[in-house]
Length: 259
Image (cartoon, rainbow, N blue to C red; front, top):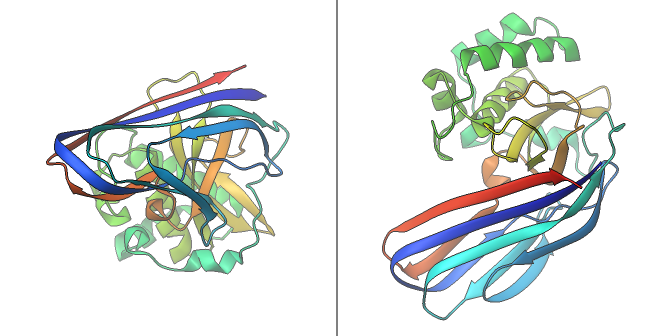
């Protein structure tokens, strides 16, 4: 299935900003699951491309001249293999994804919740855990921020795909199972979920298995991979610093269409 993706991120500032550096991870790569036919990214300033420690493409943009608005736009066509059952394999040891991060720590109540639904480590029990998490934490647009930790999201009782992924990853790691955070795009008719998406994956029996808690999907039949990491902060689409600029506001527009 071929998908046409358009992702726009608009920034506005109440004062003139300058000397900004943007770190952008919005570039999918071809792999066993997907073929990138075309992809372009538009961002002002001098640019440099490299790969991070997780082999994600990482674009650095440096804008010296003063500005009050900034548009970052990524677009292209990606074809996904509908028969591909597992998460994308990489060159990294899966045991790296047992490493704790501040965002994916698990407390005793969360661990007890996980153990109730995963009395033994197997895939079907993790599917049960994903279903239970969505009941406990219904999807609620704009209900949290990117700064929420797994513990905070779990006790908030609601969240978005980022929160579902962080909580699930925290629980899986507490059970001794490597778990990673994936950012990307989702093709779906349900417009209540933003097409820019995130999900978790766990490593069992020599394969990475998708656990999309928000949509209760367990195979990447409608997903485009962009970046892989331990949590959101490893794969954040845009991070940056600047001088001045006053108060920043931002909004995104994402379209994923079959073509």
